[in-house]
Length: 281
Image 1 (cartoon, rainbow, N blue to C red):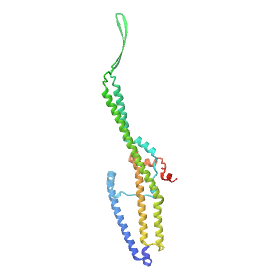
Image 2: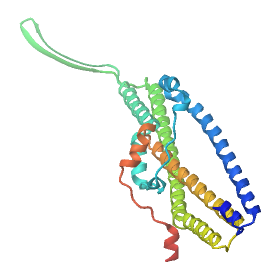
Image 3: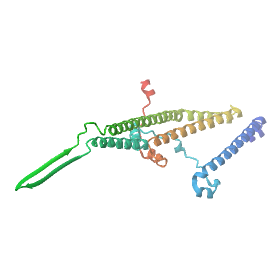
Image 4: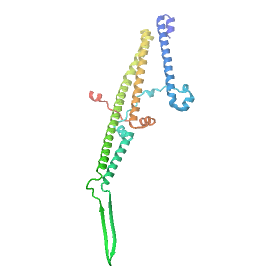
């Protein structure tokens, strides 16, 4: 198109040269991206097992997502996430088990304070007389013979309870942190989707239309194209960060990595209120 404009004398030849330079720069960027992609495939190959290594690095492909893939993922409500983390996190499960075992050990040590307990019952005949004998033997811990064991078991149970409380606080703090990051990225992504990409596309379309009518220069078209490309790249990076935050949030619930995506996909998701809108009202 621009070569035809130059041949017709409508556009200066410098415009065409500038476009060719920009094309060469774009081609070089593609070559560098392909090199980085090759290195990334090589780093990924060892994780694919022997089958992946036998197939070769070149067989790894990247699927370009459809337009529907660029929509923000929904955010789950906080309460179900905290409940799932409380039920699944291994440190909490192990802490509860240790606390239960320590409590049972303390009860056992208290029961050993009375170590010997016995009962006697029988019949005795002496000189033609029948007598019945019954007795109960009980050792009284006057000197608290098992006091050390009781105190040790009680202290261990108390320590296990404190460790469990600390683990619960750490898990809750981690979940709240991951949830806060996901909330912020989800809102930011929603704002970008509504205005950012639309404005960049409008600038590009208006500039191209003005250029075709002779009202804009090629430099302005290249600048608008760069703005649109940078806007899409910024949005894609923000989208990836948002979905990564949701994946981290799913992992914070104690789910396996292979099940984290299914947890996000299958769970019922609630809308997160935006406090900024409440402030406006």
